[in-house]
Length: 325
Image (cartoon, rainbow, N blue to C red; front, side, top):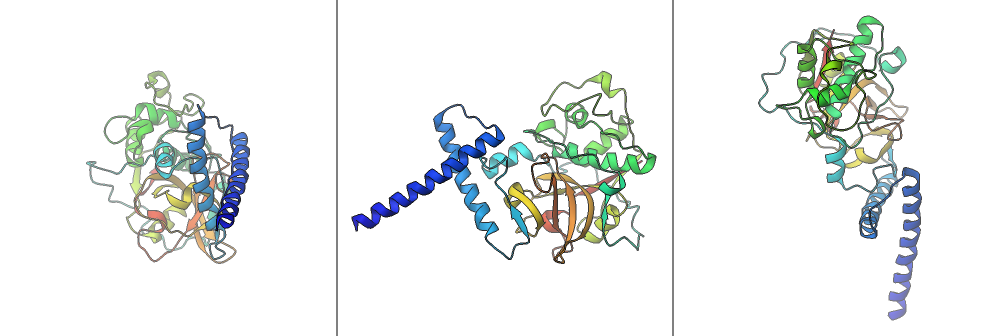
């Protein structure tokens, strides 16, 4: 009996040693340093749990997507949500827009990728700031301006973080794309990233740079709620800001078409920049994220499209909007 227990304990120690070596390699890759050994040990235990979840998911051959041990592997789900998302619901805002310019669209391409048409800037990184709402807004804005003018300009998320504050939008503490679109309309445009670079932090609004807009819009519209068909009509015509629930597998997503499980408690906003059907026949949305190029498919994700639930996968059809130039 004692021998069996000793053998089992030794096996666990070997496994822990192997995992710790993997942890050290992961720390070196991502330049992770901790203030003391207690913190390092705490993070190691979180790392172990995340790796177990990732490997369990990847061992399921029925899943058409893969997860990876990425730069977020030492974070709990709660920490990740507070640092890397940032959607805040509409609260006491005025009624959402009631017009939908693509209502009568009847024919759309079977697949579309706005990256190939020059309407998408390279992937950016919001850092440890709950500013996804600003990046989703800017992604949709950049696309709309390019389609209207032929010029693709990297616009300033930091202006929104610093200046579009009060009410629903609170910089790194979260925000709502519709409010950001209203700000851009009221300020007669948004400045570009070169004028007002991103810092991943809340700062005092730079009034000088705000007075030099690089692109403006006349209006924005919301896609009718709970309709993937209407969302398809919009994305077929321009990049669209969409909000989703990014908990669970999304944090460690690496490749393929994410098919859930996924809820509809929205916490993160991204830009829908296309759609299509995978080689194994799964319809998907193509999403541009704001977590850098080491996450996902070089910063992008594909999530399942045309599902039974009207909200769409991860709630993608419940809060979508686009700019009108």
